[in-house]
Image 1 (cartoon, rainbow, N blue to C red):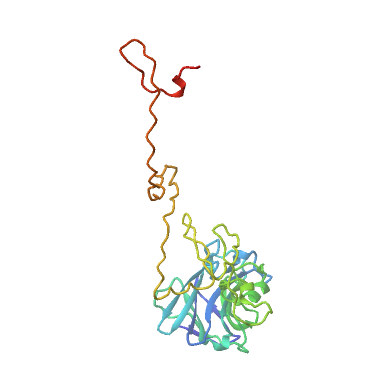
Image 2 (image 1 turned 45 degrees about the horizontal axis):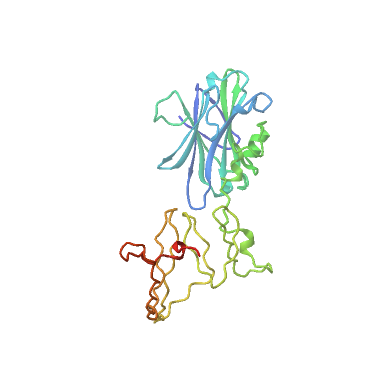
Length: 325
């Protein structure tokens, strides 16, 4: 038999463990809903931060409280918690079942309800408790849907639907959970963290010199080692890449070649040595041959003195061989 609860009512539970199921109907513009549970002591506060079980801490160290994955059912979406009531130590006096939403207040969430099942019962058994959760103002971003509290040797359930406008952070802090501003775990109310946009150009290149909204300046060219290069002149012709590093291009586009380029006769140029090997030397241009004047016949050499050999004489000798006088 299912107990249909109204806000503020309570009923005893004859179970050893409960499975609490939050159900809602998704729709355009409706935020997502997350279930969480807090194990509280007699002072209404958690004993340690481990007593706060939610989507970022889905399991209590004792294993007695668990957050299960969300499911889609014909009635909508569900988020489920399980608590083993009979195995909890005496230091746990209350178990708070809460809901929080990200992306808007609870007035935009349709058909929010809480149902409790006996964990020891059959899988498709009817729920023990059913409660339609209706917030007071609709501006809440976190709700205490209900609480389980000790009554003698057993447990009872109370339907509450009390809300917080400060989201899951406010709910956790109000029950003694130490929430660090830089900690991501309970900061669901702040929304998902999105990566910062990466600018496509430096800020200086997006503004003109006067600070107005003119066209963005062209970023300065840099060399392969990150050093800025001097801006090329309009008539600059880029050199070929050296060892694979790109060279700065001219700011002005190259002029189109003329329709009929003039014929240019170039003189052959001396080649440069390649890797240290000697290159053949080009022969100098040949000049027109010069015909020398016909030389006069040489004078007859003086007759050598007879040496008694029948008129034998030495051939003409150079001055180094002439006898000294």
